[in-house]
Length: 305
Image (cartoon, rainbow, N blue to C red; front, side, top):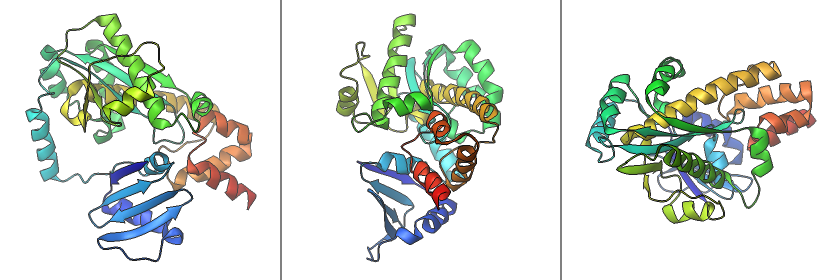
């Protein structure tokens, strides 16, 4: 499996520091470094792109996420792409997920239906990809959003995730099954007339349908779009609602364990993970964390040594 993300200068430096003891000696043109972390090879290019190669590439990449620079020029370019997209000014159903890169907290997938009549409303509300909005904005705007926009959401706790994840069921398969379920549900419940049913292309179409081939009810007619959350308002709204639910569930989890759990999967997560295991034992970690993430090995190794 190959996964490519783009990082800014701040994250570049964090990655260089993090992988410094695992870097390979060989020099490669246009490459800042190449490192091997267990079964994953990480290659950072001068352009800011980072490639993860290996069985756990998706998990390792999720630790760092996609960090794009936020210049005025890029914002204007993104807005132009949004306006010009054929998937923007239309009636559509779209789905998006959050939580797949967070060690703590659930995975949430949401599908929304946005009619063409509601496009202007969502534009005025400032709806776009949740990764480009602050949590404060999302917490403020979502209660208004869900009054007007029909949606269906699915929450997968980390206990359920750990029970499902295996050699044959990876993160992308779990995502595909969840996306299919909310899309099928909203299409069956509302029977909306839509121009498109859109999913952000986290997997190629053939692979996506291969992931869900054993599911009893399959939603067909999906259009797979790269960076769909920036081009389609149904996907953008789904992203925001998913994030809102994730934040609410995350707060409940923090209250449950009595610790301020960090989001993401960076080094700060390991410190709190160690506190959590000291307080409750390893079994609690299997309930509240994505156990296959590399953080688990670091947390337990920290305790041993």
